[in-house]
Image (cartoon, rainbow, N blue to C red; front, side):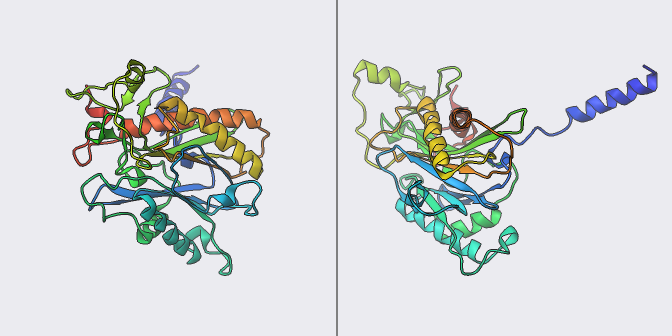
Length: 344
């Protein structure tokens, strides 16, 4: 090898080392855009996931206190064969108004939706979490304007994580009382296989239980002791220690998993069901009577390879668990509620 060739090779290596990493979030899946809108007046907001083109959708709902809109359409026995957007929002049932703003934005035919037929009705499914107690101003909650703005902000850029959008007022670890809770948030993760298959997830984490890293088994965020240290509700539950009786519907983990594979509606529902295992891996306890845990699954069909349904579902569970952990790791202090990054 000549000196010149060696110099050129080294330059190429250095250039590659400076290249940005692949998008590790939900928007890594072609055809998926994500936008947040966060209300500055109180920590709350919404997150809108837009489908650029035909996207098949499914759902899994294992929490016993869900707050949703137009989710029955996603069941395989029902007629809708597409979804235009999925909304995740704070504000409890009030936050369902966000979907109206997204519908208006789609109906006006912005950007890549400029060819949207005016006689078509946008299909916008939504799910909400309760954050009304955070920040002391429960009358401030996401509305249709919030959804309109989030849709307008949606892009293919890597998803912003932490205390933004639907995760702005989210909290976790409330089994020993709200005053011992920690900050939840928005997290996202993605995996791309060598053959081009992509599976990704986004989670808005507002769980009753603790968030546990499946890789290490360690509690990342959750119920705190008097000195601010983590208590680990797994040990508390086994000890028989008295716990706070949770108020129904004050908690939930909302998630969207997506793949570029081609799926039928029934298959998308199966992927959502398998992905739901990611919540059980990263949240303890999960799917309680006080949680409204809901998982949406989207398939864009942009990848023409052949993937096994079980492989997609297993990957979806993995990236969802990772997204949940990232949600609390990326969160910041809000309204005096500490975040994982503040725990020593």
